[in-house]
Length: 173
Image (tube, rainbow, N blue to C red):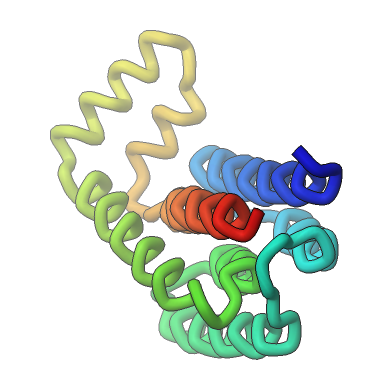
């Protein structure tokens, strides 16, 4: 494996790790600190420089701007949290123009799954009961609230995106 490909795969691993960490934080506190979005923004140049496939940084920035604007509209209608909006916009940089629709669609589908889980009160109470018995009271309390941790859906969409990007990298090598 070439050092450049290794660096690219490491960058993708960090991308996914940041999304998962943000999702876990969202589950625990229903907040996504700006540090996660800023870290993704800082990671993007490494992604673009090490990608073995063509990357369009300016078009990716345009895509991220569109996602941010749409997210801001959802935030103003109280349909999405501010941390969620910043996180999905930063993650969409990595999707770029070629994978942005897939990323947003998959994130939306995972968001629907999370919402369905949260709306199913008996299932939530059962999961909360199980978490309480293994000593995870914070996660138990998070499951018993009425708020949906959309960071989980963004991380799941990010997992899908990571798999697609690894596939693109493998095809290019």
